[in-house]
Image (tube, rainbow, N blue to C red):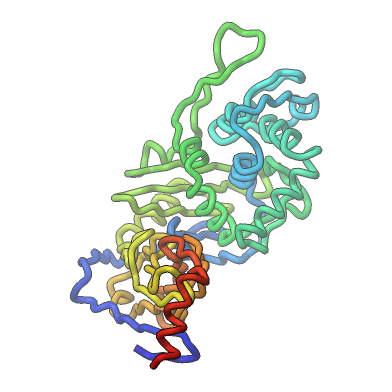
Length: 375
């Protein structure tokens, strides 16, 4: 243990012989896509990439950003009235009529299962002033997520000048969205019935994403196609509580390539859990507190996929303050823990205080002061 400027730094080398074995198939990918990426949903680590920073149109995979923006900015029960602009939007549709009202949740199913461009416009006009305003909200949300190489001009992905993303950005947006339970539930739904104004039967929405049927543990996510973007697919699968997501842009064999990417990840990596969320890590002193010490815990699960070779080189680095000054509040950050591979930080969690600690009262401090004076 090293002490530097009041900060502890503990280097814990993970011993490979203590880890569970990994099956490495040695599979070689031969991507046909213009760009591709494979991401671990929990850690955000990119496990494979091809030209992942190339700016490209993404067709209806745009709707991933539309959906997560609407989920976070709106309420599922909101009633949304379709406009004439929504009714007249071209391309794939759920056949909205101007004046028809559906809940935001129903429209989200229409957006993600049937890829309704009209649903995208109705959602955008409900959350923003219009589609243009909603696009600005999407771009702000993208920046909040931490992606800066994308630009959204519309909510549906129909070809437009200046409307682009990268495989890396789209992978990060998808990982973020999949951590939202509402989004994850919608994209994993194979079929959904929603209301249809003026008819005595419902709209039946069938998910277009074959990943749900063709891949073990398939979770969806979104298909896309325009003449400019080509065939695009964002796919996800979960096995033994480990979720991966793949992105292929402008890819003829998008189903085959997405399956290969997901299988590559599952066969060549193993998810190592270093700390669970809320797991105790250490105690530190409390100055002027009713309690002398406080427990620090991880604020998120620290789990990172590693290859067999990487497991021998990974390190866990913990840093925390020597002490905190009361009053202390539950969840207060007092340090960090990082998973580091060859100098690169793969994932980080905060060390947070497990409980509140009140400041000592003047009355309780007097005996301590008197005792020190009598020494």
